[in-house]
Picture (cartoon, rainbow, N blue to C red):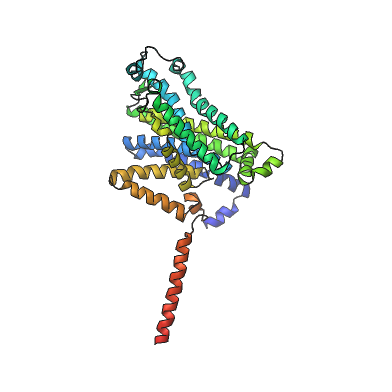
Length: 377
């Protein structure tokens, strides 16, 4: 009966409903969650949603442009640092930040001074990661570096930036990073009301980023991205400049990741170079792969499920939770390579080759055994 009702809906309207249904379902879930979750779980979910924004930004370039970035945590971290610098100066109340005083500095460095103003810090959340991605991307793409070589370069970028921030103790806080972030725009980040406001802002930002990405991939520019992913040389021979197109989408992706980082800083209260390392960046790729690469909504679902599972497993099995997580990752890659969304669409399930071979041999062995038993009778 439901199928007949769906078939009566005009094709154009049905397409639009299917296109925006995930947004509506996601919005209902996100805005209803605080009504049933404890304050701790709401804060945890808010932090996870910042990771979902990061995963969404990676899916934009990996799923639709074929560019696997193994250093996307750098852009998330730069956005976090840009806003954390503002929060640190706000918490210092006009005095020199504690880590600078301990390092022997007598006055605020010149590049820190503008970050005491929100009108400067907020745009830098997007500009800092975007400029780095744009500059590096143009040099890389102009040289026609793609595939695994691009992934290795971004991985090297993550290593280089994290080491740089660790080494500049007097200016970045070193290994500890920027700590004791106690207030945001005059409101304590530890109060329940502030945490709820931050959660709703994060949820709204995630939905806005998702709609932005939907708009990009549905536009002629998005179709160019898919064409570059499938056959870059053909796009080049058609008169387009793939290097410029990839640089633009890399800039956009880094800006979205920076927004996620900026929302992460006040919800956690600390920003350290560890979030810009290699391991966190690889984890982002795992979230996208588990959720479903090239679907956008899959990146969000993958980030939420994996990080929530990580929290629940670490609480229930503090000594063995990493093994459960490893089984989840391996099983996802082997059994449904198109991710959760591909599995729901009945596109992604298949047995691994070795399982298929083993099943075939077992079936053959069973058949031979049955024939021998019949002959023996």
